[in-house]
Image (cartoon, rainbow, N blue to C red; front, side):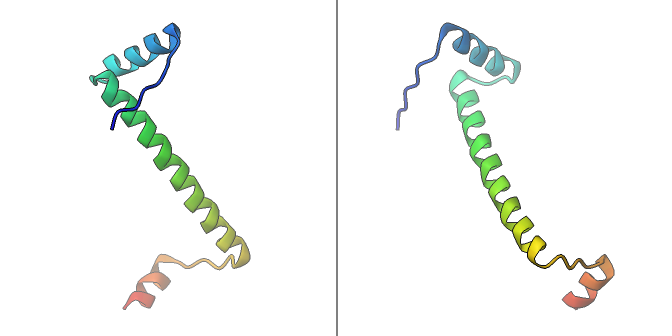
Length: 71
C-alpha cells in the first residue's frame, strides 16, 4: 500500500532531520512515529479503563497478597 502525504518545506526538513538523527530512511521514520502514536493512544485508552475500574473499587493488594492468591 502506498500512502501519500503533503508536507510544507519546513515540515519536510524537520522530518528529514528526525530521520537522519535516528539513522532511518524518511519512510521508516514516518512509519515509526505513526505507529508509536497509535500505540500511545491505545495505551492511554487502556489506562483510562483501568482507572475507571479502580475508582469504582479502589481495593489494592500487597505483593504478598497477590502471590498468595496465585498459589
